[in-house]
Image (cartoon, rainbow, N blue to C red; front, side):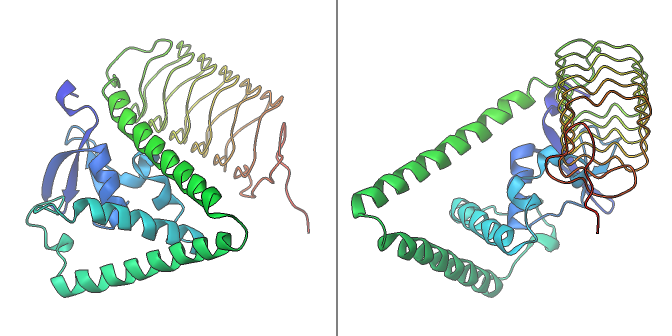
Length: 302
């Protein structure tokens, strides 16, 4: 993959390929609903996968949609993004694609609904605190909230710089940044990847037998059908990782975080699970582990 495309993605719509586009722009249009998580993306026009296969590209507010609270949060996010884009003349991610065009009447109707919800939520918050707090305290609270928003924008802007450091073609070594990289089927037996950034990487069917992955970040990585025999995974972040049908026999998972990970069909015989966190993980039999599952999966019994 060429250096010029690091952190930038092509999008496929039928036979048409558009791009490349930066991660930040794709996330923005996911929030606005202009594109969906099922759309195919690629950094090299050769290997395509759905956006949802790269969880790091999907904004948290989009992931959490589906509940009343999550939907309201998504609406507010859309308000912010709509306000940012209202002054721009080119408001489509992919030029000439009718699927992203909205008639003026439809846009006004949608904006009216969104602004109505925004005003309702604003009034609810102000009414809740007006009877309990003095005005100066309210002003301080609003100021603190604005500071938090600005801090969030700063973190997002810094994430773009981190993407430039990704080295998908780099050799396996401690601290390597393969975040979001496609290393499917790679043979990495005994590799030293201690402290590596493999967040959201695709390692499906990879051979990581006896690999050293201590303190590595494998959050949301796709490790389905991978071989992790006797792998060293102490203090490893595997939150939300896909470990379906993975072979973890004899692996050392001491103090590893597997909260929200998928373990359906995985093999854990002989694995060391001391202080391993399984909060809300999907266990090998498909049942969900309870909060507080440490060292073992606690399953609710009827």
